[in-house]
Length: 340
Ligand code: NDP
Ligand code: MG
Ligand code: MG
Image (cartoon, rainbow, N blue to C red; front, top):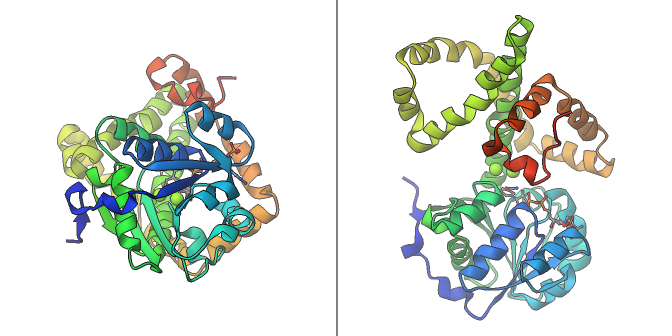
């Protein structure tokens, strides 16, 4: 089995006397900044003027422009959206990269696909939590953590791995487990996971199931509960005890149906398509398309995003969730629009 690092394996003293600049205060940024601070690490937040700046100030952080924060810190963690990173890096971070500093990422995309090319005299490593930022924060406050991957791309100081482990520990990840990987493996598996399984695969599966039931004349509300709402309950069981525990909890009829139907949904053809998706990622085809899409101001991204918001599944879901205050978190945070 691969070596998994836990709190006891990590020497967090390497961060003593160092300042960490957290660039960005979004999903990951707010979580890393707050967890590090509570672990006793000196943090400065780097931002442009705007709503995040106000929020980080309200949360009690010293907030600076990106360049001033990068100048003050020995360890610079870039937690901006991946597509904004190259420009901000070039203008405001690269000029401050004196020898021996560390440039850190939570995802390998820009290094692996050569959108950021750092000088050889700095450490370059990643600490990539395997979960959304809001869980990185919430689990930390609960005394737990989200597991993370670390990887060293460039080791100018000879201590890059120690810094990566210490950083992972101080955001709470070593309570759950930290695995070492490479930028290539982290980038390619992360993109594959979100495309084939977690985001692309799951949303397509949920929509197809919903459409099949509604097209056959069943009530959209019933189809929504069946194909979307209940998915969380099933995934919670998988998370707690793997497929085995999920199957232990469901009825034997459901389990027999699982065994009979699963391979009719994910067929050899589906797996061949998964391999093709992986090949597009490995060859850089996916990365090139996404970089170009951003340079063109996202015409296709925006068109698909609008159409998806109007899918009947989304409309019925908004109405049903109005009646379930306990699942209203996304709406309260202003992430999801209200029922129309
Ligand atoms: P977000 O989209 O949440 O980051 C938004 C933050 O970046 C805001 O504070 C925003 O400030 C700031 N920002 C955006 N553009 C600029 C700019 N040009 N100059 C200064 N600040 C800017 O990012 P995520 O947290 O989702 O992702 C950060 C990194 O973490 C990425 O590399 C991602 O791949 C990785 N990651 C993300 C995960 C997640 O849970 N989301 C999971 C694991 C890794 P403003 O308010 O001014 O717009
Ligand atoms: Mg991921
Ligand atoms: Mg990702």
